[in-house]
Image (cartoon, rainbow, N blue to C red; front, side, top):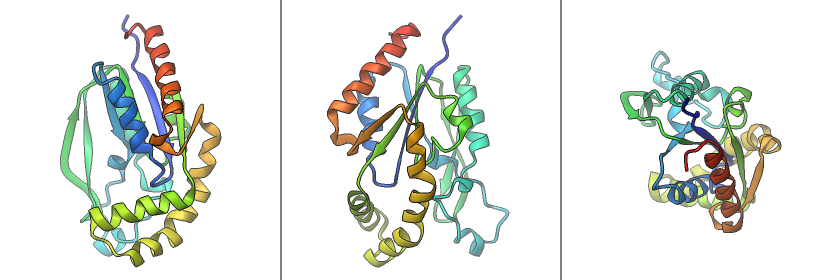
Length: 211
């Protein structure tokens, strides 16, 4: 009987370096069977709401995510079934009509700010990682990304961070650190921690006879 895929959860605040850690792990196992599933793709469909209401969406709150669908998709991947990953349209603040076909792999990296918040998701994970980065670095990274990549003003980024991102981080994201098997300070720059995680993943894969 074929072993179920290994699920690696990577959580942490916005700008913490989750993506860098995810990419470092992915690159190490690139020659093997591995995929990345981003929680950001699983924001709830809001097509039934007026556009004015959608504009009020708090994307840093647990209720913004359709975890039921995400869990359903992970369970399918664990049974080596393909899924149709939803695509979110941030210009319309709702789910797009498009989907992305994702084929099952032996390693699933689940990445997102709140992947450790839902106990049902945690129970599907073989390793739970939390990327822990100081708030000043996180806000600087977020500011650079939103200004350069999303065309936002410095004032709007700071206002959103102060009124939404920071309080949501303190209330919902930071507390999930206690569920992590490994805490990685400074994200992708912490090569020692990433090497330790990679070694642990290799051990799990060997036990599952994937390597």
